[in-house]
Length: 102
Image (cartoon, rainbow, N blue to C red; front, top):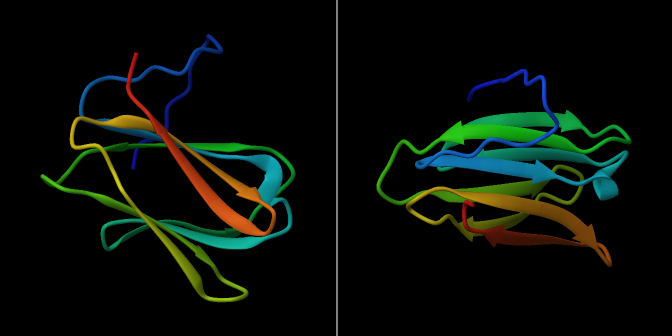
């Protein structure tokens, strides 16, 4: 897990890096975010979006979002080359959309 401070508003993405963007649709929800078996985040979300950047550390990686209230797990296989992953809550379900790096 790496935290970065940038003087520009652009999100930097390099190869072998996952940028996980958790939308503000989770406001008030308690969630946990894992990559493989590593816990990255376990908190009640505020009203703002959150971005996590994680270096790829295995040949194959899985993102798991856990709704701590219902214990529902949403798994997602990540691109082995790194990617930008948007996580939103739509109609009560967790939606994960991945796009390639630019």
